[in-house]
Image 1 (cartoon, rainbow, N blue to C red):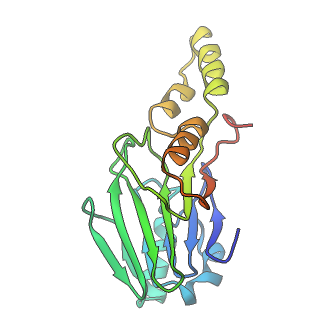
Image 2 (spheres, rainbow, N blue to C red):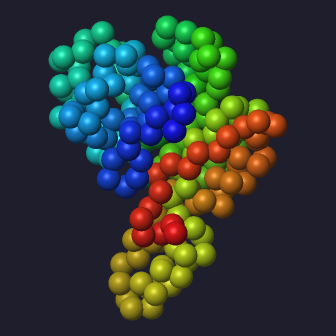
Length: 198
């Protein structure tokens, strides 16, 4: 993407985003995929327990082969994590399991990142003037409403309705970005659905 952000995987099947070459948010990929990045990674932050964000087999192998990497899976709201010129603050998100987003500050690069995926909304959260807003854009509201209505009219279980209750729409993400952005802020959409987003 750029020299500060590398999206290794993002979507319903796997998620892993590398910031500043040394902070990995989520590791829902196989070991072969993540291995080339591991020598430079200092910190791995796991937002929540779902397998597309935390591949246990991969995580166990990383912990064994790279004991120098700090792996964090649980957080306190507003907890500050420090690691080699990086500061991270965790904040609570709204999913069907305990889930966190992260404010990432690179002192070396003088850059800031807002990272949030797998959340029903961003109500009550502010992050003014960050350089990068990496936010879930899981579905388009009009498209998912149409699909949900069709599923319900056929008497089917509506996976679309479930997604609306646990994920963020493109429109929600864009509104949050517009309300918080600085003059030069950049928006990066993450965790896009192949079904519910064109």
